[in-house]
Image 1 (cartoon, rainbow, N blue to C red):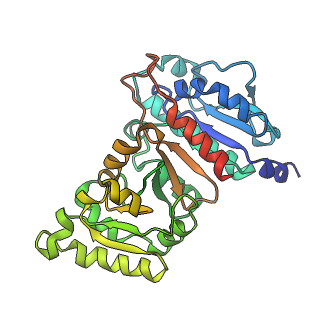
Image 2: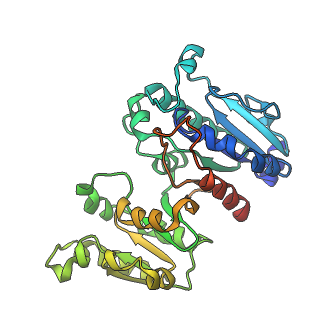
Image 3: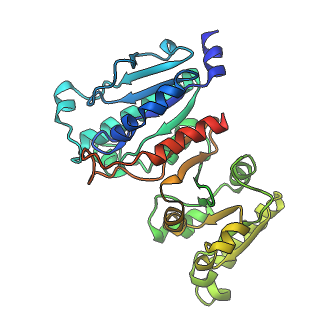
Length: 324
């Protein structure tokens, strides 16, 4: 009965990310909004325990302790007290990477037990890997494995919706990974996303300069992308392309297209971040709940200096409230 009740009020689960990055700062900077939301929905924060929280946070250790509303905090037990005390803002290590992954794992455990939506604050793939998890590729991929589903990264802003078809892989492997995409899952994820305006066409970006120039600058468009586009069209999506990537992010294109499908990470994220700035968020498609994160990284260079900007995190909270 309690689990059913918690599903009704939809918990908001938030991970600290790397404790040596700006995650803890932007969380505390947003305390006013967190307090306001906690009056109608429970908020659960998973963290290392390095930084003290205000007294209204109730310390818990199990999912069943979460009530209908309020602020709750869960400290993972992956680090010793000595290791926690050694963590320093702006100085990441294998221990901070271990802590970030521990918070994520604990949030997944709570989500599976009692439901809820998830906001993940930034972690560093480099330092998670350094902690001993050599196969870690990022939140999106890790969550896909944890829930046994196909996931897709949607960079979502006010004007742009950009979905990179491949994420954290070397450029040389992009064509190989494009061939392995589950197109049925991709189509279903796009069709079910409320943020994508399907009344507008979808821009499918070419992999090569000028979308291959009819095969003169690469064969990937004809051999890989065109069959993908045909499949998506058969699923009812209005896809145009392959289009030259250097001409689909100007003002007219932003207004014309409801979604941009980029072949690789930087092809889509560079124009997205330049245009949307701090208002953009990273939304994971394909999960049975909402998962969103700020569209920036750990920013170790400014961590602990009072320079962190919580705008994107606040936007994440707003998205959770909007979609739930």
